[in-house]
Image (tube, rainbow, N blue to C red; front, side, top):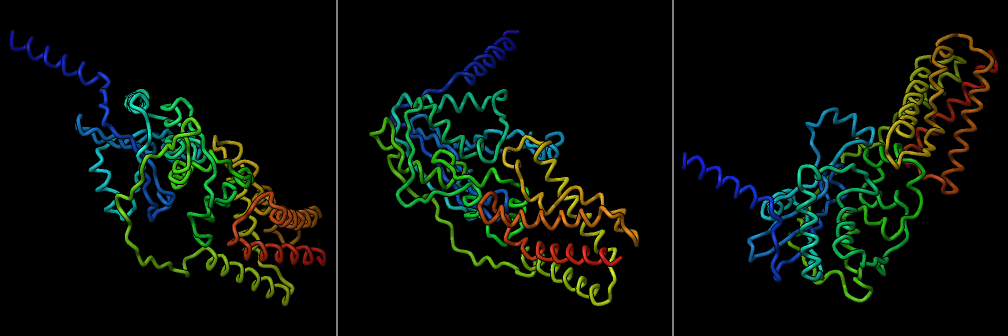
Length: 389
């Protein structure tokens, strides 16, 4: 009986001890880690994390915002609707260093110029945030991600005394331009982003908003001030430098090549139809079906999700949802009179899209240009074809 009581007493003491907030010592260091981009789309923008190091307490931990659970119920549906919870993670620095260096991703460190009270406040916040009931947060790519959380938690630790300004060598850019810094224009990731995200990301970002990208956390923290006088960063170093790689891209699988081939095929079939005064029904059904379905998806992203960046998307000027209404008509030899009016409307929509692009309302994917030209020529041919029948 005494043995059992002793066991439970020790268990209770260990639980209470584990639940207590640990105190740092004066020699503790708080730093920001910036990890370079990876090879896949989900890590193409890099990553940030806090490092808490206290040799006296044998603490060397890394806290990062951006972990997610693939096993969560309805994972992909929640991701599509913008309702996916991300989590804060906690790992030993040794494991983090081993992981990122094994993937050849650079690791840079900035030791923050914080007082002991600020270090303890930041550490306490992270530890409390890591508790199971506080661990999850609703992710937003631009305004609440692994990088913006670094900025926000640093502000909490310093009681909002940090001021950020544009580094001397920086230029004012839009959110879309900042994204394109990390993605080739001729990549499927860039194409998908430019189609899915609307004109709301074509406004210029403020200094604070630049820091949705990890590399700008590093750049803006370097020039930030505490109380407008003291440097936020005490010292900077590179812990691991990524090695150059000969990453070759297969042009034959690039968007511009494939969309270009599709556009050439559409124009060629249209030319053959023009010469023979016929119409390839299957092509029109395919074109109007695909553009209509893409339009429906864009509408759902705009109105049926919580994503902040999918609104006011003028890709709907070429991917028009009501194109689906023409499918029945296009399958017949003769069409209703309103179809010609609808085709004129689609041609005007493509002209409006060009105007939006020129005046800067929204920037569209360059790789779409061949397809847009092919669609315009096809619409003009159909308008003339139906005018003769």
